Amino acid sequence: MSGHSKWATTKHKKAAIDAKRGKLFARLVKNIEVAARTGGGDPAGNPTLYDAIQKARKNSVPSDNIDRAVKRGSGAEAGGADWETIMYEGYGPGGVAVLVECLTDNRNRAAADVRVAFTRNNGSLADPGSVSYLFTRKGVIEVPKADGVDEDTIFMTVLDAGAEEVTDEGEKFEVISEATDLVKVRSALVDAGIEYDSAEASFVPATKVELDLEGVQKIMKLIDALEDSDDVQNIYSNFTASDEVLAQFQDAE
Image 1: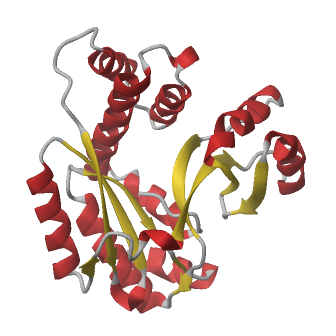
Image 2: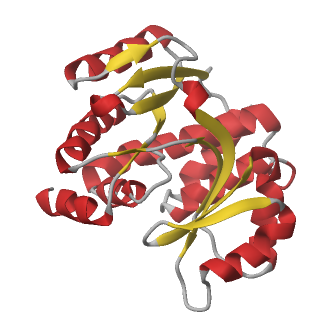
């Protein structure tokens, strides 16, 4: 799940539940396998693989799982699946735009899972291009809040590397750049000794739809249904909500 507003933090907390952890591990391992297949098994020469491994480690994926995924993806070990990336577009409750990125070895199964999730949760699938134009591919780095690390410090650190903005997302800062500048921005943070949780190319909405508590509950129900599919890798949405509404949502969980 990806979001780029404070609701992302809410979902990260939910993802820590043991029942979800297995699916999270599977998605992170799949990312590693695909990155290794696409750009080779050496993280030093494959920035996408490097970032996929770092994200997996931050989420406590065992080292053995990471190593095997690299070997499967690079062909050093048998068993790698022929993963295919498919993007679905749709609208959720309240007219919220939703992009669903699947990484699957069964296109028909993925399509059926996504269609059912939308249909059963007051959403609808849309034609290709009817939703994606609302999003832009960007580099997104999440930096946890820590002593001595504030918004201005981060921005001055990454400005010359190509960062466009730094936003306060509650428990962490989000650094946005062009996708092509992601590695340079991430390297600038590392050189300055600033820890980061994840760095990846993502889809960021140009405009956001603000929802009330009922709206958040409905869209989160759709997102949960989509995340139940093993084929769904990432979900991008253009909804946001106030801190007060998100607090009410968390209290109701």
